[in-house]
Structures are given as C-alpha cells and as structure tokens.
Image (tube, rainbow, N blue to C red; front, side, top):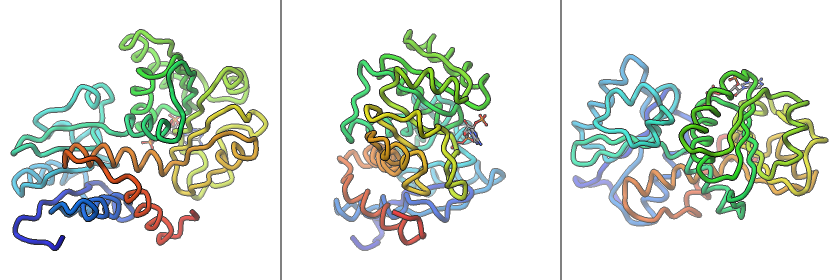
Length: 289
Ligand code: ATR
C-alpha cells in the first residue's frame, strides 16, 4: 500500500539500529496484509530517549520496538508496563493506544514460541539456559513458567543465582543458577532436554568459539542459539554434527517480532513472509545463511 495521509508509523529506536532486521521484516508483513503502516529505524542516543518517546506519542506513532541500550531506561517514559516486562525489567515493544504508551517484552515469549513452532515442547522438560544478561533474563522468565526444570549458568555465577532465586520465588518451580564451566555443563547436560545459548559466545567476529565443549552434545538434545550472526554458530554446527535438533537464532527474532506485530495490528503475523524478509536482509548484509 502506498504512503498516504492515513499511513501510521511504527519504528525501532536504539543506538545503533542501522543493521536491524526489524524494518524489512515488519514492512514485508504490513504489505502482505495490506495494512496502511510503515516501519522505520531511528537512531536515538541515551540523552535523546525521553524526547524520542514523547515525540512518538505526539506524532501518533502506532508502535515502537526498543533495542540496546534503551530497553530498561524507556520504562520511565511510558504510561504503563505490562507485568511480564515489569518483572524482566525491560521493554522491547511499545503500543500507542490512543496516546497511552504501554510497554511489553516479547523476547521471552518469542523464544518459547520459536521452540514450539520448531517442534520442541517445553512441558515436562529440563532447560539449560546459558547466560544471565538481558536476553537470557527475558527467556528465563518465560521458560520458568513453561518447563519442568530450569538451570541457568553464567560466567558471572552470582547473576545466574540471583535470577534463579527471583524466578523460584515467583513461580514456585525448580530453578537453579550456577557457574558456566565445563564441569558444571557436563553434569547438568546429562539430564537436559533443551539447551539455549543466550551468551555472546560465538557471535561475529568470535565465530570459532562455542560456550559448550562439542563432546558434551548428544543426539537427543534440542539446541537453540539466540545468536543470528552467524546463523550457523559453532554451537549449532557441533550440535548438528552430534545429531541434535537445532533451532537458529533467527527464529527467536522472527517470533518476538511476530508477537509485537500482533500487539500493534491485532492481526495474526504472516510469519513465513517475515522469515523470508529477515533472511533476505541478512544475506544482503553478508551474513552467511
Ligand atoms: P544481551 O542483552 O544480548 O543478553 P548482555 O546483557 O550484555 O547482552 O549479556 C551478555 C551475556 O553473555 C552475559 O550472560 C555474559 O556473561 P556475564 O554476565 O558474565 O558478563 C555473557 N558473555 C559475554 N561474553 C562472554 C564470554 N566470553 N564467556 C561467557 N559468557 C559471556
């Protein structure tokens, strides 16, 4: 649909945002459904964040995605934050509901939907989550509600232990935290069904690194990496070689976007169109697909 006087705008704000896949993904989805919406990227520094959010409201933007480094700070400028985003302490999606800005976090939900859409069901399963940073926290929050048992391992063990303690109290589930080391990995992986990497290990340019020694991977594991540059991380290559089922990082990106799309439009997201657009853009950017 061409741009007209009735076109509404959605945008991603962050710094940097030039390489974001969200504009192509959402514009392809808007086009597919014939919606009079357009999605753009705005570089917003920390100093400009408040003005940008107030501006989004006064210009009548329909929605925002919020990325690094504003996922936490943006909360101070919203009218409301849903309980999941509040607990995670981060917002990645904002809906402008007639001038009322409402914050959501679709990262954790996106990750769990990505697993399910790829045939991996969390019920009665043990998940081993690597990392305790922003993305890991969002995933852990959702996973703690869905899985039977959750173990969080992080280089800085204290962060994992603290996160586990919060989740244990909130959901009354088996959740524990510990150190990301070969010894602990060996012990925990023995009883793990789903392994998720939410650390930065293996991300471009560190492409020859993996957070897990390859000899610990087995064919009955499902392994998801949330890194999508490269798409085929060392962890996923090793997992495939071991015969494990793998879910690539682009899946979480697509489904966190799909959930945001549905919040803004109230329409089911055309996931295949979004996947195709995101993969196409990655290829254009020189990421090996
Ligand atoms: P994001 O928003 O992508 O989650 P982040 O909040 O900076 O980014 O978190 C990065 C995660 O990767 C953290 O769990 C970090 O571990 P620490 O909490 O110990 O810093 C993890 N990480 C980064 N580099 C790592 C490395 N070389 N080895 C192990 N873990 C690493």
